[in-house]
Length: 342
Ligand code: RRO
Image (tube, rainbow, N blue to C red):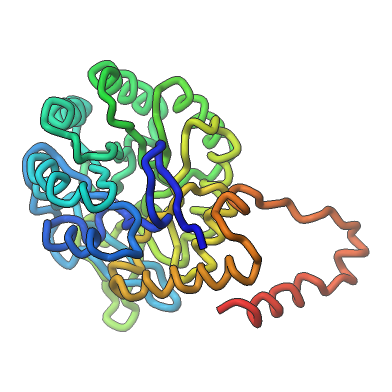
């Protein structure tokens, strides 16, 4: 089975990466990702120039069967210089992408300048995070379309002569006009990939027994992750894959808890996937299980490479109202799928 893929032309042995934020803040965590063959590429924790401790605790609550994960970490990170050194340590093992989330446009430019002016031969690319939902007083850049344009214009003014590919991490969008608007903006800059999606911002998970929120910062509001956000993630992957030219890859992120979810993201057009909540809550062994399941699914479908099905989602055939009422195929389809695939 061929799992190999690429992001911005950078080869990955498997399509599975961590979502920035998970198991990627310290070198101890990054080394686990580096030495696990399930992981094709590494994204470091979104960083600022200086290190940050992040928001007060409790700031993460794991997903359950009936609720998403919620986080308001508040960008705890070791600072850009640390991650430049991490890439030197782990970049010869597999691709390492540095995630950047300055609190201002100037800070984003300063961080990118720092990367470009350092020895960056072991860095595979830069993911500019335009969608952190958790820094009090700092709205998500990517919900302000003029700010996206201005940010990319200024960032590429300083980054244009660098060989390092730069992608952006986007929040979920919920309206076709927003997909189109953002895609039109991105096409005007040399962006090499988009990661869809960051957590669904400013949700609320509560504990009805104790009648409290489950996290402390922002009165309990935080970014949602886990199975509950998969449909939103897939919609964003599918929309951006269709709207963007093929020189811009789409990385799928959101709601992956089993092998079929990886298959679905790639079917919608993802070049690779990032896994967040599952890795955070259940560790690397759960991610390894996903890859095993994904392997079984490809085998059963007689696919030998990701290119065989990437982006090949079809729209279901139209039916008349009468046929739709009579036709139980959807029901059986779901049942048979359940029987065949783990
Ligand atoms: O650190 C965080 O609170 C955080 C970030 Br930077 C992000 O991009 N997404 C998220 O869910 N949490």
